Image (cartoon, rainbow, N blue to C red; front, side, top):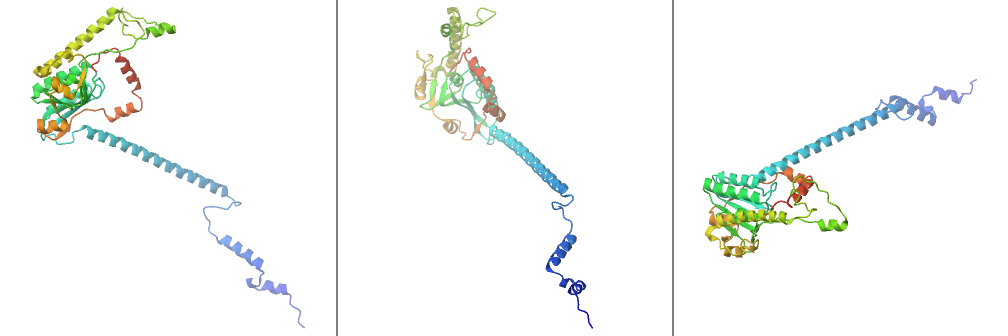
Length: 355
């Protein structure tokens, strides 16, 4: 007699095919977990996952620091290239662009206020003129003027140097006026062999001034007391907050008259018989370019190209002007020269001016 078979015992003796579905899924998941190769990270809940996360964070921070360092180096290098490019451009701008050995007309700009430290200072203008005269290719030197005037001292230095260089190198000097050639600018132009103007240019203003302000009456009304201590009775006679005596006024006027006579003598020596003086010629008035030609203060109407082409007979023009370098321009632009400008403005109150 055969015994009845137990279904569970037959299932345990059979292979995986006879297992229930739930047991099959558990067995496959366990096998895949055991066979999975170790990766760089461990899932949360397993030992060591905190360390793996920290390592990842540290690696990311290190990568970010390296990238920031690279960008910093890049920007520094870019700024260095920019500075080099600016200075290189300044050098190219300062250097004449044409062949200096070929025949040409040399040009020196005199623009803006004629003053120490300005672009139209004696230091810059004289250095530029010397370079222009020394060049064998320059057939003549043209002073391209557009200035309302300035310091009689700076103008006198330039005027004297023009006379000396003309005699030494035996080259003509021409003054070409653009908009304005007044006071100290005309003081310089008077040394030229010929002066060319536009018919609407402003020329002349042969005079001297010393300007300032007086606040003594205002201070009395406001009840403000000026406390100025000096050694020397006339030491503070140009102080705007102190009264001016008649003796001090006469002294200042005598000084201005003397500088004015120096100015007149320079104009007469430079213009010679071409000058047709009238009682108003040296009064400080100014005239148009057309009137200046009629009065003998200028010679002809003409611009730079006309002088180079028709007078000098050398159409190639080379600029020898000395200008401020880029660093000085940047300093002024960002306000570092504001204190110097204030001091300069204060100084003009006590210094005679041809403007």
